[in-house]
Length: 207
Ligand SMILES: Nc1nc2c(ncn2[C@@H]2O[C@H](COP(=O)(O)OP(=O)(O)O)[C@@H](O)[C@H]2O)c(=O)[nH]1
Ligand SMILES: [Mg+2]
Image (cartoon, rainbow, N blue to C red; front, side):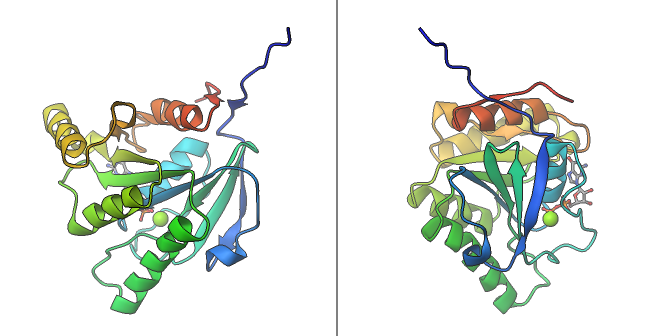
């Protein structure tokens, strides 16, 4: 009998495919699509860089600046998409709507196989966070919540937040919120493993 070897994704083998104004410009592909959503400044770019071990996405000092969809090819296993953040107070209403349209496109036109919904580990989710979670869930997308910047949160607070998220959004057992710190590289290995396993792969153990 032939043994089938499950592919081990090397997250560090990531290439930048390009930046695009909307989904119609994103190159067609049979690879699964993973999108990162979250409010401006929540740590999307930092997490993407920590996951892939490279300085790909720009970590901005000026939140709300990225308006393009950044697409990465992770080890020819999946496409990882960094979406513009939502809910930055100083962007205009039109900009905010453009952001949410982009997200909508990845829900309606090119449904993502997995949504990494980033939430600030220091606070309760904002109204927009709740909307985003409810929206992606209602659309039937597979959502994994990820709490960011947990180096700034006490363990007890973090556990409370995880528990309340799980109850409020009725997250299944296998979609418990993960806690990460891009800065301290906490939870990065676990997140890689989780993403890989959801897509039917394994994650290669790299730093
Ligand atoms: N303490 C801490 N700060 C972080 C972490 N991740 C990101 N940041 C900071 O949060 C700010 C926004 O990060 P960025 O990745 O640009 O967020 P984005 O707007 O969601 O892409 C930057 O000043 C980062 O240095 C983390 O894990 N811990
Ligand atoms: Mg960013």
